[in-house]
Image (cartoon, rainbow, N blue to C red; front, side, top):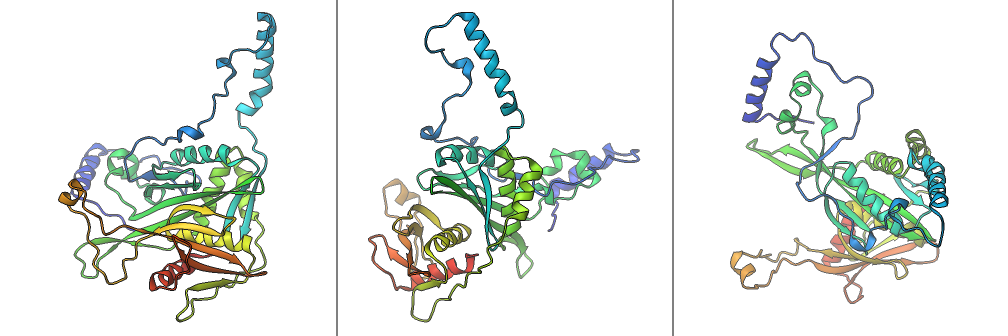
Length: 373
């Protein structure tokens, strides 16, 4: 981790020193510090839930009573409902949430329909300090914008004193953005969380800085799953316990590397596990998912191959104004998972469902295998 101070920082620190002259001590944070405290680096509108997924207001005060009754009977029933539901409103206990594990991969299995879970996940990321980059209810995918983990910035006496002023100056040099994917499985909802990590590093000639992709941390994904469980109503200690003690599947998958001249990946596991593993690999690799069809074994992705050797021309202001064609348009592919009697094979199809043996298909599978857990 690195911290850089700009010219504004020097001014702020100078002012802080003047303000704190004569102070003998500054209160420090004590106890266990939060390891996750995100602040979005993108300003945007508050998170919103698609209109077709909003839930009806559950407050009985705004419902007209049905049938015929006297006011005293109605008031009595309302009081009984309030007393009975008090425990549900204060620290509600969530039931039907399990933590599943396969290798380093953990996910939640929730005994609720996806229509109930999806809006809660949207709200959860807002509560964690993120703005949304995209949400696709049809594909069951929610992706945040990049955010900085402010907990990685040390709480020195200067930063503690100046607070928000130095928040605009100090930088951890690291960013994450998260992707959440929901799946319907046997009447339940499975929730997967993955993330992309970037670090700001100095250029080789030392003249500047650049952002490069870093390694994904499975522990961070697990921590966010635990927080999501708490948001859904699970006790904090219980959520941590479930995530930590999730039993690891003893059977480790063996992923065959792409062979020379072939565009296929073999997995020594059945369709269900292979489908899950491929889906998480797609999430971690950052592929844009347009749709998926589990029954057919297809993930629909959009992919722009920049390694073909062909010049990619970006639209300029005139082409945008007069409807010029953007040649840098991503193509649609299918990542196909096929069951082969106890094992599975992953291939790439074009939008029409035709198998692809092109260099682009091989590059897609190469990226995918690097991100499979």
